[in-house]
Length: 117
Length: 116
Image (spheres, each protein chain N blue to C red):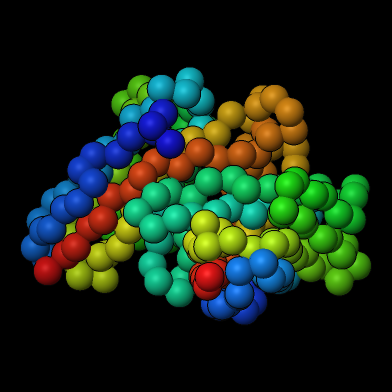
């Protein structure tokens, strides 16, 4: 979805490096999420934010931190990257007041493929 | 623990056939059940969703069947086409979408391949 953008799209880094993945959205949604996708494990929630002042841990937050700089921007940081953080990372947004019964719909960005060597 | 379990893990279907993917959930507080479709190199996108006040919802060739007593729901793709080849995720969340309830619990995903 072009309304949710992620940068970079691909990143290769080394163990111990600090990495920031960025997400921007033009949908005007208050709620934003970070997921990681691993083969055979599906999508797992790392962090989520329901507004600029709200940050919540998901099911796998260890080793990650986030920053909600504005309604439109939500960044994910790996303070000291390790190889098992190699994965595909997705940002998503939602609007609880969505019309047509789609209030729970989440809109995903194109993903960032991160490789930690 | 896996709150939503999908089966089978992968599926190969002939063009024109029916693809069926099953999903089971544990949390009886869930009352919103979507299926997301993901093509290679793309993020997942909502395909179809159901709430437990109905047992079936159909949108074009895609149908969700819901069995509340069994805590199961399934996706049926009728007249499967090669363009339907993708990964399909079932998910569940609470409703209304207040804080804490809008979190989606995803299944592990099923890869569906439709061969010509």
